[in-house]
Length: 379
Image (cartoon, rainbow, N blue to C red):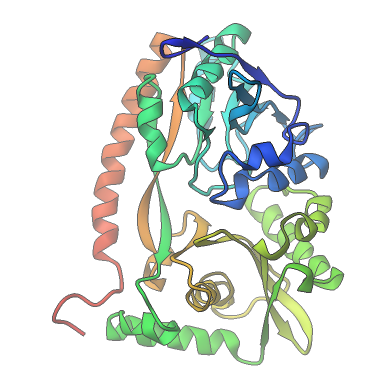
């Protein structure tokens, strides 16, 4: 395969864990989800591999001296679960036409709808070419790179991958001194509504924020139960294993942040977050007892409060959820890239993606009108 004008040599490793951690992490260190520790933990905990339908196949490119120059976390997928970019309709169409959609090649941080770099290092075109070669040489239906960074879009477009848009809701820190400073930026009615929600959510409860080694076995037991309850309702079965939770604190240290709600000293709800260099990422929430607005308090408001106190510029609270708009989270475009070598299949998907992009553009305009922030000259 060629990287523009020069020959490149790419290889597939059996796992991220088999790659030197320092060499992998030297390629990019902006968020925890493509870091060696996180990806290796997914493997050792058997959250990926074995019978999960995610078979690790990381793409690696070495430089002329044999040093790792680029890498992409990649997986052979036997289904489309845990991706948050839905292609089930594409799979059904391909299979109705007599093809096998699975396995497909997925470049992704598994189970993680967090935008970020997927082409790590200095040779993005070599990695994309390697992904294409894996698809063609093995007769796969397609390759997909989900939640790619904005700066990677042009790299994929240069090789004629289809770019698909989605919507998430992120909160941005505009220099607020504290939570009240954030509230002051909102329209009066929205400000009062949030204060009422927080008061109702906190009635009779105690809240704790635990980080890194402060998270003991009892807190992990509770969070595991919360995760199981939410996962069974949303996905039918949870994606992550208990071993993943057991190893998370040790693997990622102070990047792990847990918010708990306690009633009479007993955890009744929790929200698990990971802290990057400039962003707090909300990942999992669950509860053992329903309480008014408790989800908003633990997953959104406490995340904003913590981000302000720790000087972070944004909070990403996961996929979907238009209810986040009223809480100050703003709509942003997310992007994924898709390689479909069959020309007829590619044309059909390209038409779908173009129509979807137009619809998302209209939806964004509507959502921005719904934001709770004060407009110039108004209260």
